[in-house]
Length: 389
Image (tube, rainbow, N blue to C red; front, side, top):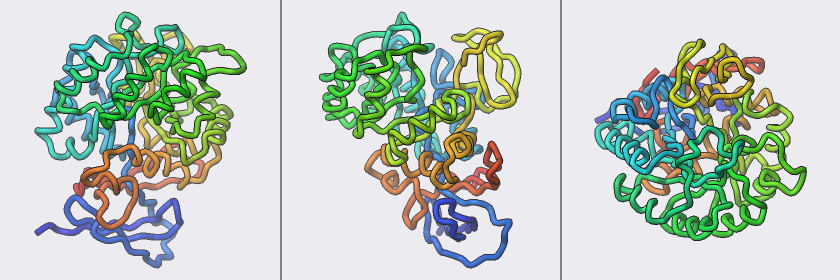
């Protein structure tokens, strides 16, 4: 017999005060309550991040990745409200990708909380644009053509853990590759590309359904029209991910993109790296060299204006999105809960994730927030029924 826990707060989507009863790993009951307490916190489902490279000093890429680090990263993310996340592997040699996949798979088998938090893995590459700008910081020596046999080897080595792959549709084999992955139940995203609008539409026709951090991973200067950004914004079959940390996209750009894509076809991602969640200061990194993490969460190469990655978790992106794009808190929160939940697996508890209703996963955050705040002040986090904060 499990013991029940109760949490009371205001739903930012409706403004109603709720009492949520948690029993084990699921929500047992949700009740509207009458309260005149102006100090009630906000209460919402746990945050869902479809793109996490690292956090809190832990990384799912590189030679040092191991199951214990994946478990520790899961706990660190839960502490700041991200209760479900998709580890994201960047372009690398096949052996390195397989090593990371196996470490994540082992972590899920050994730790129940990690298994609940990680639905699948996102491989961002290696089938990206080789051009400077769209390639970002992905290693040029490992950029390669889409290869169905390589995908099959990833899945064989990880027991089918790859649930999303980002590709650049300019590769000649992109359409065949996309069809194969979609038929196998793996999401395909467009990103880090210099593809033509025709190329973009071709992979969408083949089943691609997402755009990876739209507006980033692009040339500094592009043709006014046509171009690959307009093509992805105009394509209603693509849901776009956005990094709303206040550094990756200016306010007017982010606002215009959200209006073009529509809130229902938009999600927030952190794209955070291992330095996210660490104190401000200078750090040495294997890819970017010396980088500086500022107090406002900007991560940049020392002595330059160039970004060296993202360092703000979703709990920081939600209020920044609200401020930058003029959205209500409930609207911004949907892009980090309900909307990304549509891209979780269709079995287990995942189909009910992203909301608060009986039978849904007991993933909750209780927090304080005022309109001028740049961050959520998290009081409590419940992950798979366990209060972790």
